[in-house]
Length: 239
Image 1 (cartoon, rainbow, N blue to C red):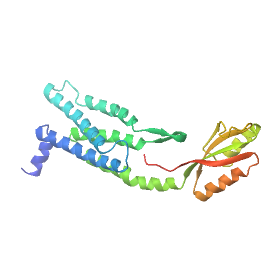
Image 2: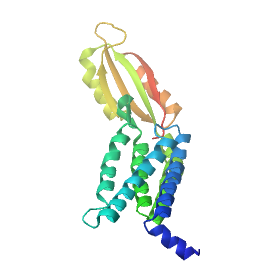
Image 3: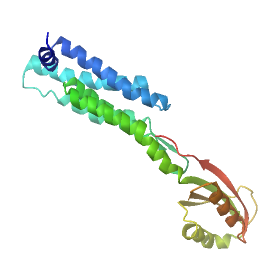
Image 4: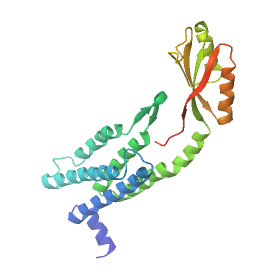
């Protein structure tokens, strides 16, 4: 059997092409999932294989019905439901952490794209499936290093402080917004339980440790600030 005959057989709908498409979906899904597994993401190796193979099977089922029943049915109708349905699975990988910090979006998008790759395998669109897998892997593994380098330049710090004069809350919050360029300012109950104290949490973007220390000292030097501490340090995390 020469290459042309084998390639034609793979593009036709037969037992060999069905097996090859399912195996290809398993391989490509596992290839994408292995990278997510190394990053200890919620959806890893097995999840991506199941998503890719499941999407491939829906495409194969549509082709099977079309071959059995004829052109009175739409072979793409079942697969179309996968594109919308996979979103519910992706929601389970998205988490909202402190200060509305969201993680898991990359994993959710990867699952959705893996499903599309599985559908491409099921329909025999091999070139799109292979190139799509390459792009997803490069985006998840390689481009992340560039993104991480950019994030490291801007660390997120959270500072908790208490001021001893409730009447000056607006003055201080304006100073945090305008002078310190705070990303968020939140008025909270004072942790010290001291009368006339008011608690404030601010979120700042700083470039390095020295700048964080300088800003903290600047806040502590304010007249009505009873004390100020760094309450949370949030390091950039991979999605």
